[in-house]
Image (cartoon, rainbow, N blue to C red; front, side):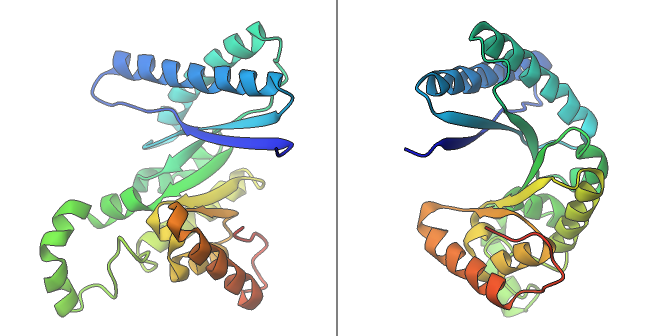
Length: 230
């Protein structure tokens, strides 16, 4: 068993009801920290990473982070584990969050780019609807490749790169990665390496491809980058 276990989990943010969102976030946060306590009691050093998804800016993150911190203080205090380390970060899926990443990084200890949704919100395309005219776009060469399979580096990628740079200006040690099917596509992984991400996350069956692409990027990569995809 590893000596350190990193656990990343979502705390949902529901926009249809503020009270329902708070209740849901509280329950999820409680489950995360109670589980962390149980594992820690077995002698395993566990570091929970709580990720708030779908934020539009720092104020939304700040609001939801308060819930997480309040629950963490309660659960860890009751267990006598107030010193247990945990991190609160966010998934960047909305263009406004990316454009204001310098402000978001004041509250977020890590970024995870949800490029499936970020592609939808940036390009104004629904993944489901796109399949209905995908072949026509392919025939007309409107897109160089399916943007939901290969990261659109000209548009979405530019937004990602900007957010990485803005985030690290505020918090130089900001941990940054990508979450989604793009994380297992070779050219997208190489892009993540170039812009300075720390890791990629993808479906299990894509892991071998992602590891190979990351290794190739590291061997032939741009030496000017200081952070590398792992």
